[in-house]
Image 1 (cartoon, rainbow over the protein chains, first blue to last red):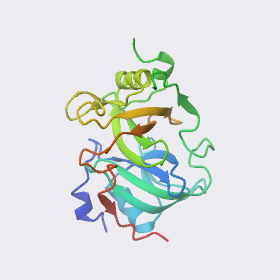
Image 2 (spheres, helix red, strand yellow):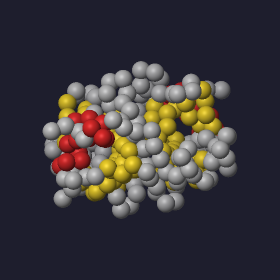
Image 3 (cartoon, helix red, strand yellow):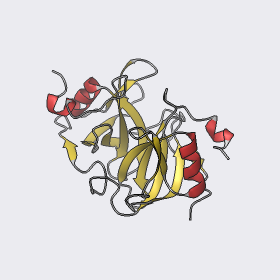
Image 4 (cartoon, rainbow over the protein chains, first blue to last red):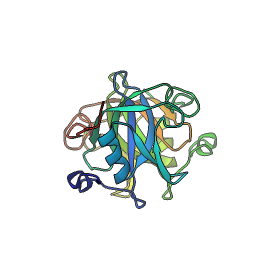
Length: 116
Length: 116
């Protein structure tokens, strides 16, 4: 079994065959992290309900939580208007970030000096 | 003036010098879109408070709303734990999507058949 061809036809991938996936906590709306998927990772995510990514650094599939226990149960998935970004709404068990923070965006806030 | 070197040193860019920016409505938490920034686009965003991207298709800077009126006022910006993704929380005027939809993720929902 592979990714539904009707979905695969709509995907626009980077030169290395990947699509970024934005991961959001389904009830609070927190943006948890961004990860990368190829067709197979998206197929596994949609058919298992467990968020599954392609690790660019390790060059392997990565079922979120298999090592850490910090599973992401997928509640909702969508493609954007161009087919080049995925949005997953998940129920995140524990911390989303490998640092132990709830989200990957908690630690490094940038100053917006021009904000009106 | 260029991007603060303390920020530039933390950025991890794609081979073409870009970083993906997740754009979220600051009060409702809706994920509106994903766009791309180089150092200059991030510098302009942080110093003007207007979300400014690099258009990969047109090969030019793009101040969101300059053509459409659908401005994004930046309320908050953060880097993720790896420095390879930006999160912007904005106040979106009108529709974020060029199709007229409020977000770019409204139109193409994927079935998650494996969800528990």
